[in-house]
Image 1 (cartoon, rainbow, N blue to C red):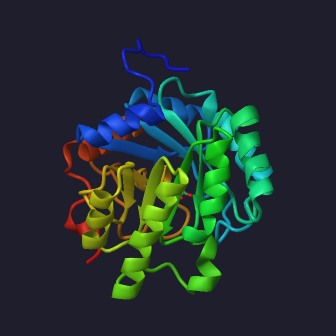
Image 2: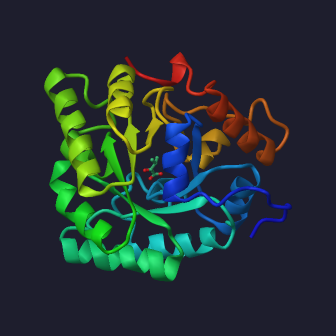
Length: 272
Ligand code: KIV
């Protein structure tokens, strides 16, 4: 529910595809409550993600693993109340999509009871059947490749993914498979700049980067990182917009302007 006179178009899957085609950058941020969601809406953010990062920044956990379906549903309901035009994505939390049936059931809750317009799930080609089932049931999907925080104990630390040629080729192949399965959007996290550019060019669907490349079709960061109120360390790929702003709203607007103009990310916020 925006307080400003609204002349913006609704951000839909179709609109995102047009933005990729016309090379209009897509500005995305996370949010977890209605008040911040309304600030993001009023600042022209295109996509708001209720990320399972809420486990870390809201709940103070060390990883995203403890976050439950109920947590995600509650925060999605809060955020939905603050939005008018931005597209709302809800993250599928750890172990909430271990079977196709479970994925469709939980994603259905986020759409029907939460007000989400899309769900996001971590994983490569092995999630193609799930993406396909969600797609067939009318649930738009954002895939998530590169650093996948739900796999933290398999990876053994938060580090750049896809530096080795084999891994890079696999990531590109996974991206194409997920697109063919029906994914509508892709997030690439902590991926070398050249690989992120290559994947963005190879896909028809929009690609959103976080620690990836300015060539991606859009950018996403964790809201609390840009506001400098993160619990724990702020990652290298993130940037505080608070130090150059006199208000939270202004910091969010500066972030949107920097993404739209291609000023963010600079070389300091990507990986070789
Ligand atoms: O959980 C989250 O907030 C995310 C973004 C950082 C992409 O997955």
